[in-house]
Length: 325
Ligand code: NAI
Image (cartoon, rainbow, N blue to C red; front, side, top):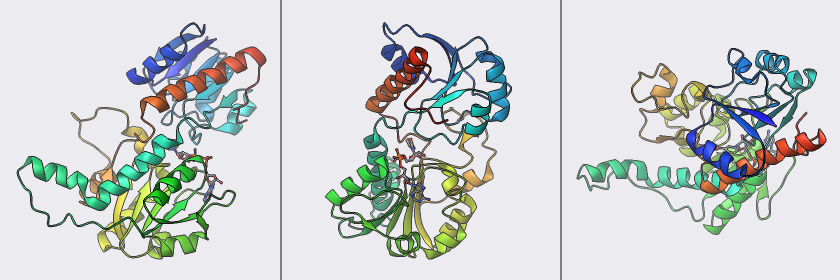
């Protein structure tokens, strides 16, 4: 199969070349994100392989279909960047990687929580400047604290297990799933009882801005909010207001609603134009990283193997068990 890879980084190319050793797929590397204006670069390919900040919207899909693309394989679990209805109408099968390493994201979620709680990001800078004072670095024991998980799928369950190992009281809200030892509660109850709220549900029209001004008001004063799922689950302006008033005690995010223009690129020589993002960076109690929760060697190998598995299955049978449409 000839596969056009959009926006692929060096570390991903290595993982895919490795997974394709002897596999017989032909790769076309396109070092640009998928947009309506770049989709024609995939003409002549059987499939397009995309990632979270590509935009497989109706316009891009129409161009892909006109060029003979029959499958879109996303190298991710989330698929909110793909217009499934447009793909179906164009006769394009869409497949995702439903699970690769929930541990990678769950462990990173804990990294954000613990760093924020114990101010590791600030201590790192202080010590390098010879400042060994502890003022401002006071944290709290995780043991005995209540952590609320919104979404109890694969990543939510892994996160719950780690937190339970630390002696946290874990409560969860999920309309479908439950998890061992996690007390199921309503969203309102979760917000009102949790010292830390962590998001592990997908971005859908229903979950967009799930955390907004109203839900932040419902949280315990000074609670921590963690988002390693999708940026638009949180209304960033409402989070900024919450941080300014002290209602939100701290914020740890690996995803941001306007991240498509920022993340995965080295912009250190440019002036960031996004004033909302720039404001976030001014808070001492905010920790932002650039969508790296999935980024372990194990997860990269798993993503490459599963994505190529989807493409091989489709090439052989015209179907794919991980198809979304
Ligand atoms: P999953 O599909 O196993 O679980 C998602 C859970 O969310 C399901 O149990 C579902 O019932 C629940 N859910 C749906 N709507 C909900 C709502 N309104 N309230 C509460 N729960 C709701 O997905 P998985 O693998 O656990 O991943 C979760 C999310 O993590 C993905 O959708 C993706 O956006 C994000 N992710 C982020 C990564 C990163 O690098 N930062 C990497 C991988 C995934």
